[in-house]
Image (tube, rainbow, N blue to C red; front, side):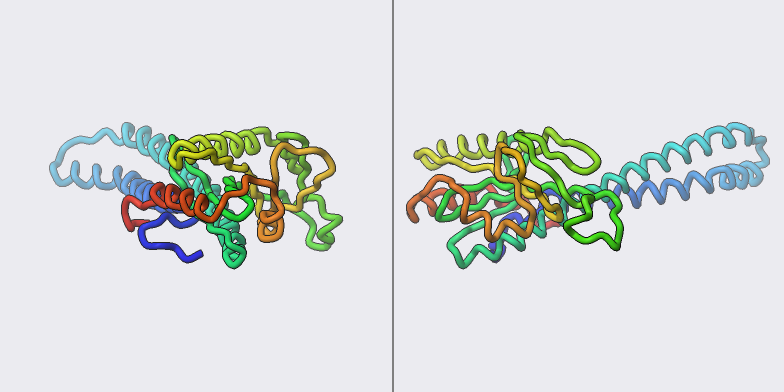
Length: 259
């Protein structure tokens, strides 16, 4: 899956947000330094002008401003860590999709929709698949635990619920379904023929227990190369696939080369 010139790479939107938040965080660090030096600068200027200065005002304002900026910077770097996790998850899924290129699959990333983006859109012999990728941290686990006995990296499926060891998520599956539905409507209208897009949820790094029925295919990252060709989607002729691919390519153009 070579990246064609001007096309969005995996995690392109997240990468731009990650870089922008890094700049914001750095600006907050500079602001903190200015706040710390403010009382000394004010005292020096007042002494040079031989003017009285009320240091009590600075003793109130400076700590309040310092705490405010610290909290803002902490939120930025916390959210940036979450974005990095999602970015690494999308990159990992993209590398797994690359293994399907010889089997006739084409993968495109970061497709811009109406107020959201689709992480990966895959076109292959067995259909079109919209893959929503989620990066989720695992709770601490014992280093001596074996992969099958350690439950900290395992999750369960129950209809549209994803049951993690520490929480239950009810938003991921409906989101993947909504996005696939939007994508199906868009491609049907753009291509002038019925196009069914199958939703897939990718959760890299997790072991998935499939004891109960689930609404859509939920795959760990490493399962994708073997599992995706076995899914039942809409069979399209080579000509129809090329028509779908052409429409996708128009939507993944970058607005600039800046990352």
